[in-house]
Amino acid sequence: MFHLIKRDVILQKKQLLIFIPFILFFIFMDVHPVLTFLVASVFIPFNTYAYDEKAETNILLNSLPYTRNEIIASRYLGAVFYMVIAIGLTSVALFSFGKLFSMTDIALGSGLFLLFAACTFPLFYILKPGYITTAVLIGFILLSAMGPPVVLYLAEQFSGVTDFMMNLSIPILYTGSTVLIMLIYLLSWGLSTAIYQRKVF
Image (cartoon, rainbow, N blue to C red; front, side, top):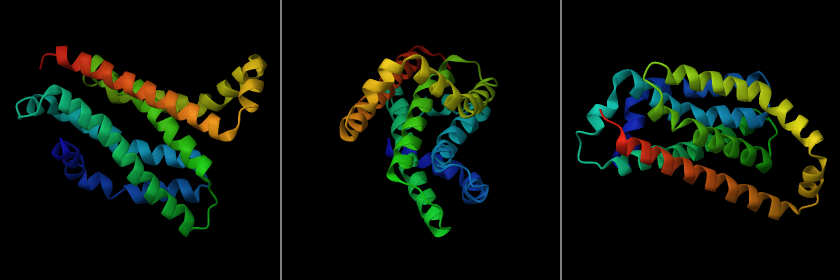
């Protein structure tokens, strides 16, 4: 399974050359660190899916000595692995250019990425090739543009829930959010596995 994760880097050597300039663009444009971390985390996993969609790689993968469970596991574990690498490189870049960021920014960026990945990864096994990347790109733009206003609106409408969360201690809030995000990610993993097991290539 490690070789499947490593394959993503080998296939994306050219795309990886634009990773740093891509992140530097966001830094120079003074984009909020949370969005910068989110975009950096999305880069490799979703480029892999876009490449596989064009090349119909699933046919090749299913001819190799890997089970379908291992193929899906490599996607989800690989996304976490590349998220950690991307956040590390982005942190170094932000620090090098004197841009302030906090552990909260990293936590929010990585949490948003895992939620976005959990919602979109199953789509790659549900939608027909040719439509997936477009759907994910539109979803990401909508999330980036409409996410904050929607959250603020919901916070105003459900002030009781907001007040309850504000009264929680930081450790409890972080722990609860982490557990919830991990649960959603694992449910997405299970859903993708179930869909992929029944898919015909």
